[in-house]
Image (cartoon, rainbow over all chains, first blue to last red; front, side):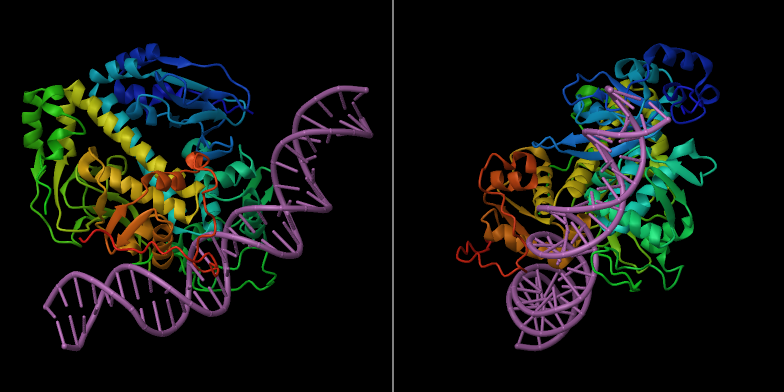
Length: 266
Length: 266
DNA sequence: CGCGGGATTGATATCTTTCAATGTTAGTGG
DNA sequence: CCACTAACATTGAAAGATATCAATCCCGCG
């Protein structure tokens, strides 16, 4: 169950570290980092009322960050998989601005921000890693934003699934099958869809032969076409595909084709 | 016309600097920073094929970052106003991943990333400023994402307008009226709406008496209610408001009140 | 003064949500 | 080990929101 490639990401900081940072720096990081014991699903790792002191990384399991509206309904902001950092927004705000919740049995590590700062003051390579790390977060965030703003529901789901596949397994050999750590509702919330629509999009992707999905297990049957669907840019490659009529709602059994309008004018 | 509060943001780095950083550091920054001459609207400041060497800040004018899909249609990712930095995603990717375009007559300054790194290596306060700066970008980005994912069209536009108001004028006294540096199409693209829908949302906000808008001039008539609309959380405060039927499309029998447009005589 | 691009408005098609019912799965306690 | 329950997932039908297609309209600009 628990991926044992569990070297603490707090010491790895986004890249091979002892080599880059030097053993003394890693040793100092060790004192700044805390390895937290595993927590149960649903556990809040921090809240917007937790005093800010540290940034976090996932060791194993998975985390979502959410925002609550008055009704207590939550809006999922992002998911964090093993090796990924979260809580970085607190650096600017000097307080946590959202809430981080474990999706599964999850272990995280934390880096005292004060301590980290001091170590970084004396290690330019570490400082550079941190910049790179934060820039990477912005990049990811911006990609997700573009996917949201520019595309329709099926594209967003395709994008999200591919993103999760890429990020699970730490990078390397792109699993054929993944097990999602979150529910349909959570998946949907993070891309601005209701659970029902999310489910319909699963059905749709299934029918199109792009994925197989049963519960939280997803098998990528035709990653290329899925990619094409996620990314209108590549869509032209697989010609008369890119079906549009998606919602099972409008009875049409026809796999209608259209050139896919897409918003973003100008 | 050009806001003369034009102290180069490249030297200010997100906060009062000489005080914090010390004059020697600011002096070194001066050598790392380049003040670029004003460029015409439409000018590309960098492209995804420009070799990465520097990050940018807006001195005056306004900038949009965009991504192109195959058709040459652009998706607006974000807007950048005076004092704001952009191009930060390139740090991670080691190349620019989008394209930055001036919306008006605009001047930017750039900081060589190499040079900046060297100065930061020797100035912990500068390093901290940079972290704060990047964290702030993530925060902003995440806020925009949440607005996108969680809300409907009118809320997204309200959010965007309020965000622009807040950011124009560098922060201080919240202008009653602003002049938008971008078209309806660009505005819409950035929040995932077509130009037509964007225009309809303007009409709607106008009819509701929340704003007056004529062309690119926008006057904030009822900022509180606008805020409430942007943020469902606060919506409960103003009870029986939170109108829902928005698109003029569905024959709004809702007649009468014509608060009329006409923003301040530009 | 006329041109042309952006803005607005209208009518319709399509997509997404909402409300509601049903099916399915995993976890629990007997 | 099985029955049972509660949460999650899927599906359907109708309502609502947004996109698309297509005309104007209007203003800035030459």
